[in-house]
Image (cartoon, rainbow, N blue to C red; front, side, top):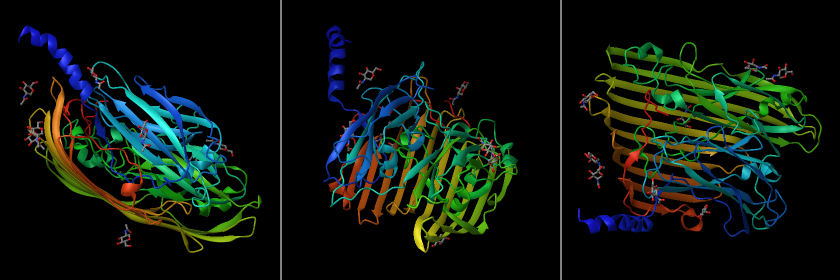
Length: 574
Ligand SMILES: *[C@@H]1O[C@H](CO)[C@@H](O)[C@H](O)[C@H]1NC(C)=O
Ligand SMILES: *[C@@H]1O[C@H](CO)[C@@H](O)[C@H](O)[C@H]1NC(C)=O
Ligand SMILES: *[C@@H]1O[C@H](CO)[C@@H](O)[C@H](O)[C@H]1NC(C)=O
Ligand SMILES: *[C@@H]1O[C@H](CO)[C@@H](O)[C@H](O)[C@H]1NC(C)=O
Ligand SMILES: *[C@@H]1O[C@H](CO)[C@@H](O)[C@H](O)[C@H]1NC(C)=O
Ligand SMILES: *[C@@H]1O[C@H](CO)[C@@H](O)[C@H](O)[C@H]1NC(C)=O
Ligand SMILES: *[C@@H]1O[C@H](CO)[C@@H](O)[C@H](O)[C@H]1NC(C)=O
Ligand SMILES: *[C@@H]1O[C@H](CO)[C@@H](O)[C@H](O)[C@H]1NC(C)=O
């Protein structure tokens, strides 16, 4: 190369870099539904660059703002989590807790080097108003590792916006008290690691009228791809390192004093380094930036829990294996949203119907055709039915009916020494709680997930994959929440190669999202990407123009190289 050009090149490159912009990652979601015409107060909660941050979360003291009306009287509260990163790094789990209550579980899009990445995730946290109304301790645990070959740091900021209430915009609705079911550690994200089961003694106010549990479970480590784990009876037919055992069925169970109160058949959240990073760039898999929460009505247990004594709340996760074992590990928490009776007198009453088998009904069928050549199907179903009469100190009698009807199926095939793999999983069901006939919880959901995966070389260093998955959910998570209906489908294809000079790949993604709610808000978004660049993006519905949403990426020169090693079943390299 000509000497002058060599001298000029670094200058030209830095000029080009200054002009280029970072890739904007996002997850499709409805915009905030909070009143944009209300007076707003935005406060910085925390700012932190997470480098080598294992065991070192950000812990800050929060005080409520005073300029948007009396603390707790707000029409709503939202959080804005904005992050930049540049380098090579895994996706990482982020856990926000406030006074030991988990309020948001997120994960980080994987960065690449050069222009880096940026993303903004917004979340409505109005239901946590009882926490935000008082000074407290706010924690973000984001365990990152920086070492040779992994240099991506996550530079984060978290803002909270408070919307002033008025005659036009009444105060947001929420429970009176929120009780954490977490490790209660003062200096961490407080998530319990299961197995083994996690138990906590909780003493409830004697005048509780209703209690709604909100549970957040997520698979991690050997359980990150829990849907692709193999029943132990077929595990031996696969080459070592292909995947993990203990089967693909998982349910989260919540017990009150040893009595099963309800279960969760979770949605499979794929993080942005999962299967092939180029599947999820820049459009993350649904829920990767806002992991789903699930609700169980504990109101039938209120007569038992109102005696002023400690009660044992237990969370665990079990499989369809004979011993119900799972691998390491899941992170799980619950928050208990308690509605109080104004009387200050003890609630009484009785459970009248209790039908809740300890385990789901499950079956596993399949066949081993030869080494590395296996087919199987795991099915599970469940019915829970609990009724109770709850009589509060002020004399109000409420008849509660809580039911869950859930089904699950997982079919996997492995061919050609397990180098060709397919998965079809669907979890679906109907949950309902009524209080004197009025709906308190509704959760009708369907979570189908299809994956094809083929290694295209003998050394398992290049592969092609496609994923087609949906999140369909009609949800009323508590009577003080707004009923929402979400229908999301993402179809993505990718090629990926592990290379000593930098892992690289390409891919396409197509997303169709629609949202509606009981307040009449609607929103649709269809977005597609090719090779990390958005090629189409259309919004519609009442929320499309009215509310802010994170901008999507300009077409840019994303490198698609320098990714961290993707995480695959059985081959996780954290
Ligand atoms: C990203 O980091 C690299 C060094 O690893 C640097 O050369 C580049 O300028 C950085 N990009 C931005 C946008 O800061
Ligand atoms: C819960 O409280 C009971 C006494 O009511 C005690 O025996 C038990 O050890 C406590 N359990 C935990 C996990 O603290
Ligand atoms: C709490 O309940 C769980 C599940 O029923 C049980 O395994 C555990 O031993 C109980 N813990 C205490 C301290 O009573
Ligand atoms: C849920 O309800 C729908 C109709 O309301 C029904 O078709 C479906 O089978 C139910 N699902 C389960 C798992 O019970
Ligand atoms: C597979 O790995 C072996 C040993 O590392 C190497 O000799 C061979 O060339 C590789 N084959 C392919 C197709 O990459
Ligand atoms: C996507 O990138 C790959 C290189 O990884 C390239 O071969 C392909 O042509 C690109 N596709 C499009 C549509 O630009
Ligand atoms: C990705 O790259 C592979 C191999 O270069 C190519 O066959 C494929 O068409 C590319 N995919 C896209 C979406 O461009
Ligand atoms: C979120 O915060 C970032 C700064 O941290 C800001 O640039 C952006 O405008 C905010 N987005 C919304 C919708 O408030």
